[in-house]
Length: 478
Ligand SMILES: [Ca+2]
Image 1 (tube, rainbow, N blue to C red):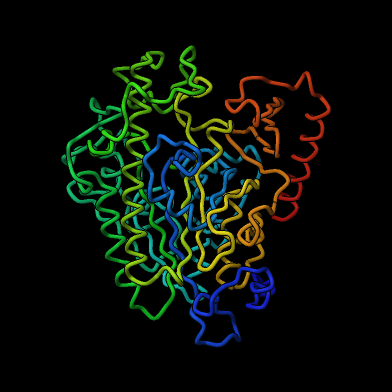
Image 2 (cartoon, protein in one colour):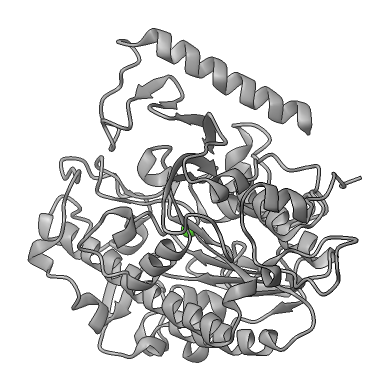
């Protein structure tokens, strides 16, 4: 019931991917000496497009920039819901939320209670892949079901999110002892708790003095085992930073000069604190430029720290001889406001929340290093990876494969992309963003401060029509 015609080797070649023999996807009936492509999926929590390759020359992100130079960087990639669990749900299920009203309910539904469609890792698993997860891939770090009690998170039984998805779940937590404690970890094994939850921390420790260094080491060890295995692998590694709290070893803070911290588009006249209130309770003065700079400095340091962990993992991929038969995806689960438009955090339908970092490197791809300006969505990733690996295509997916863009960086696949948050809907087109009834010309007004709905009613009408068509298509399908 899920089968559609398979992607054939000849079709991939016709698309001009120029795949080398060693990198051709295995397809049913194909020569069994063809080596199937592995997938390494790097999920980076709360990573907005804030790297050198995205045009931020002051950022120190050499490894993500190297990946962008070897693959395809997507300038305009949009998540479907601007919060961790729901965004990951859309990615992993390949589904849009059922309706705008369901997006809040959708928030943490990465737990499959028998209602979810076959997830991307499960699909790979059922088609001959060995599937592994490390860190935060679904919503819960470690992937196990949990319950929240104030600032504490407790694992509940043996159940895990996305049952049926993984052959192995490997999330060491070092001195923090549990994945949730590590996720909110401070140096020395401390964690966020009642009475102690600073938004930033700079400790003079090495990379394993914070949890992402431990996750990177675990991923490298696992890749070493996978390199000698018979089966192809789908390995999802979810690194924790730059999610709050902004904690990073001092050497990454030292890459930036506090006085020189970029404050472009930051509006201190409003204090939309969002989740920062959970952390900055004793210094809630988000209108203080010194504190705003400290927070931004912490985010930049956290991005550089996570970049270094990405670099170690990708160096291991090279050293283990996996580069020629492994697709690498790097994805931020949503964007983030650092004071832009007067907001701090995610949880808005604005460009700063909806736009995330995203890049793909696939063996022998055409035009590596040339970025794409096409509008792409996180629901497009599942069909893309299915097509690249030559697996049968499930028929429940809402997204569109990005293969045309991997073949030709000037190609486009979507006229518009939908997003959802707490009963409201947004539509991003090439030039505009519609948020409910408000219209912004995002390409000229990136922090979306000037509502043009009254000035351009014809554009509002056109975008509302497009929105209805897309929502109706989604309802008709499911
Ligand atoms: Ca997130």
